[in-house]
Length: 171
Length: 74
Image 1 (cartoon, rainbow over the protein chains, first blue to last red):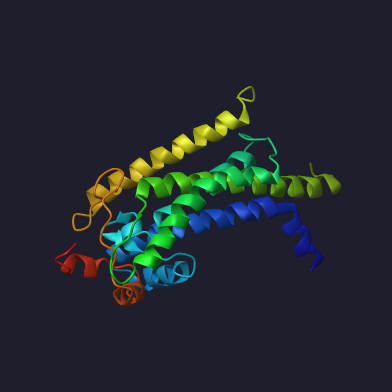
Image 2 (tube, one colour):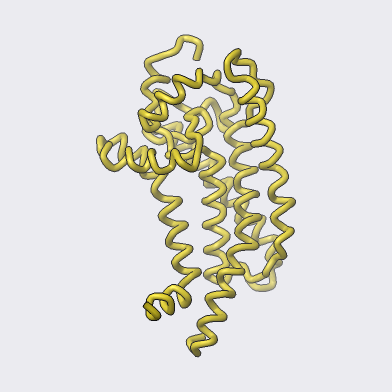
């Protein structure tokens, strides 16, 4: 049991990166699987990601006429999170940002997504929706949010891993 | 590389993401004849669908069949 904990402590940041890579890859593979007739692989992915995203197809990027398993905003939140995390992993980024740096990166997504959600809820039924975002705007605000989260979380996880490795003399 | 501020590097990552979006839209454009993007920005809002249809649509796991076969308003 202790060995498992030791392994996790020594690799917590790396494990997190593998998780992010899988998380980012599966939704892009789902439409490919669907297009080549492998529904048995695509369907579980769509089902799992439906728990995390509304999956409106008009807010999603498509491949082979099938949508990516989550919307454009989610795609770029997690893709930006992955890129920044990899940048910390390989030393491209080193600076540790304070937690409050999340706030300015959250304002654009809160405005764009918040107003759109409000408009959608109020507009369902009669079809009159006073604000709809665009995929480009979803990409921009999603990316900013993902970057904001990652510049706080990624260096924290890296320092946790490094601290443990130093404590056992492996760094 | 270490002489460059991290803030500038973060901006560079954002530019890379913008490029990735452009690549995605191109793949979408070339691979989806039945449901192409409206333009680079994909800015023309498609008419929102009835929630009941949306639920059925979700149960179909993302297929665009309903959209393709269907609604003359779209």
